[in-house]
Image (cartoon, rainbow, N blue to C red; front, side):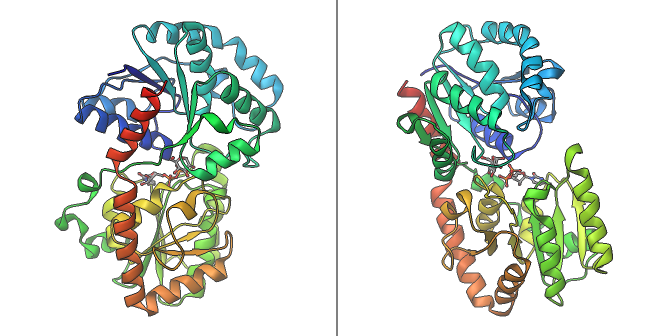
Length: 385
Ligand code: UDP
Ligand code: GLC
């Protein structure tokens, strides 16, 4: 069996990082040894160690970590200066490894250089749509250059992410799609934990129809669209779960103010970042997804469906690869609070239809997005190098 080493820059609870956590934990449980090197500290390092996996940090300098999708050439050049020490440490970490696999943009650059110098096959897992306007033209060109010239293979988290990379100049012949995989058996909360009453009570809400929105608080995740929709559906209340990173804290302030301004404080509750998302999802009537930019994949959609919730999500990106509109969930145009309100109203008024969508959604996602399948798909990529 080949020795694989994963490198990723962030050790916090984002979707891409949770993807990595889940495959590495499953790999461990099935006799594979997939160690991870993080380029920064964070809670995931200890989580993986606690799960019996091999995780450690090789710290990148601050100039490198400050590099953003929209960074100027100057910032990129200044970061280059801090690169040498990290690349040296990574080359040492690559000893005895057969394949290096980067799970983020920053690790693509750093581990890509180190893998080239250490002459190791190198795979990049891409979790974003490179066409996304948040990437500066310089960053987009750098990503495509590295994808085409520094990797042995690229993995994307959806067909949409693959097509976006190709549209920007990525080589079509060396890309595979590996979907996020979930350990559905382990992830389903025990019946005693799913008590809807206790969840609503904790949130300070009465036992009335409730929609849940789960994910990072960020402008492009579109939490404001749900607030607009809830205002239009009398009797509906909402749990908004997730936190903002520093750069999105102004948006969080704005949506809190929006709730006040619309006099919805007794119907819309913000719960902040939670580790018990599954328990909360199991307690709501509907799971909503509101991203106003195309979602590269959308773990929360799969999670909601796997828990047997009807899901209403925005059309675009990888979402259409999870939900078939009218069969396994409902789709609506991004940013359209009126259409979201209509979809929510239809799910609440036609419970039989909602239950049918939820049941079909559940059987579809549990068949298509298992953790076993994702790990096997990655194995196939590694074996082919
Ligand atoms: N999540 C979480 N706690 C929260 C909010 C979100 O654990 O308070 C998890 C959620 O269950 C999902 C992930 O964060 O697994 C978000 O992934 P997704 O692909 O939906 O979006 P991303 O943030 O990666 O763009
Ligand atoms: C990224 C994307 C999200 C995806 C996740 C896991 O964070 O924004 O859509 O589900 O990666 O692949």
